[in-house]
Image 1 (cartoon, each protein chain N blue to C red):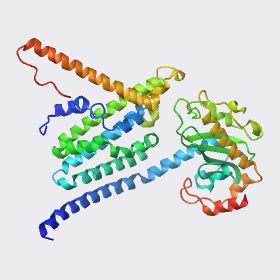
Image 2 (image 1 turned 180 degrees about the vertical axis):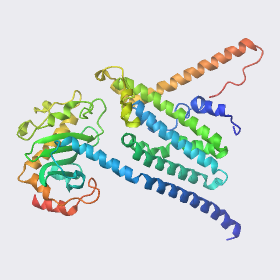
Image 3 (image 1 turned 135 degrees about the vertical axis):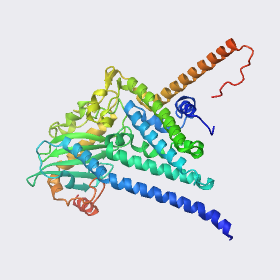
Length: 231
Length: 235
């Protein structure tokens, strides 16, 4: 290979590498500068969501660092369910379930559900969905108070058979023009309640080992296996 | 073209060669995001920022970039700029970042940006490349804004709703409620609304252009009746 060919190949290659290096340096700097702020943002956003579904002053622990993950199929959830545990002076006061249903009109709907130790609901919020704007999005609190209908309900009030939308002969309103979305949400909340009402499921949540790392994504396989065996 | 004046660059970017209405580039984010004014503005500003940063950088580096590696280098610069902007938005405009979601990283694939890099920035001085990027970006952002406004008014009866996501709590008052939410024209907020809205904007632009050409023709025949009309702009 003669020199000029080598030069022809090498020069652009080195140039490209130089540009890549500058790009990497730039991104690394920006990443370092924004990392903490982004993490704080994510934590705050999650915290705001959790605080909406538990009673005020019901807990004094750091919810974000007190969570466990259970397999989704226990709750008919389409992905693993993260549970945040609210404790007051060390004693369990409420559990917050982050469940996902794919029975909506389009894509999956992620719901946070707060359940008190007496197995009544302290609050429900939909945190993520792709339902049709204007029709299926009335489960957003800023669009309609519908989601507040869940407050203080339980499997006794209304009775289990009433845990459906009105069109299916149940207790909960559907939206004008959209039944599938509310039906999916009512079903998801009911499934979490059903699991929580069994035996001492709700209390057992509080003795699961705490998830390490990012609680929303991590899944502790050991815990999963244990819970599945217990079934 | 190489000695394009600032005036010409401005006209091209904002009107004659508007990326949204004439070049029809970047239509995917254009249609997906513009369900309201604030989303449109958010994506518009992000696109302007990317375009200006990448075009100016490429113009500065244009003497080093050999023809064989120009495309990879353009892509590299654009991707780095977009990622940096994405990180900054995630840190400082958290709520808006979540609404615009996938469309921020997708700015990388917006053809306007590599298009301007190749067609303009690589051949012009940094001040001109900067101005061209700013005008092209503004032209695109204006289309986003107008389309977002049309769709928001029709579907929700509001304008500048959710402005606080971008400008902080004090901007909550910016929201204008024109009529009751219940009477909204839902179709406008759904994907077909984007196509219909953009179609209408295109029609309006073409109509205005046609009017202008006609007026110019009429003016010319009146004053210099002997001169034949030789060059009617083909745009």
